[in-house]
Length: 96
Image (cartoon, rainbow, N blue to C red; front, side, top):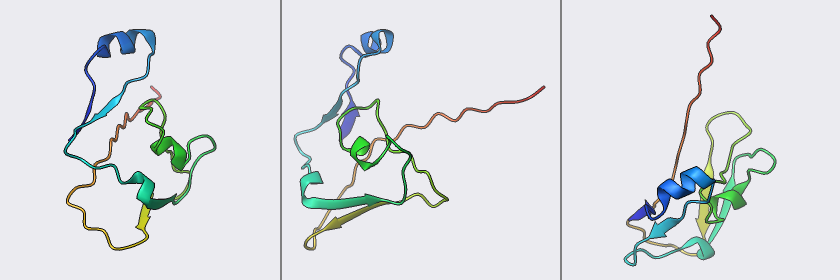
């Protein structure tokens, strides 16, 4: 399972350091064997931000829903799990 590293987590929050995503040995990275595309993106937040191993960068869609990430393999691939790290912080503003 992919988990967020807890080593130095408090220090990373305090100093603004990058967090590291740890991947267990029982998983196989398939990113180099897949062609990927996204439905849309904002400038500076494209697909490469999904694959840069930096939890402080992200893909952000710039189009109407649904927002899509397409993964295409050259040949048929059997997969048991697909792991993705997602983090969303909704902000609501109210005028009183």
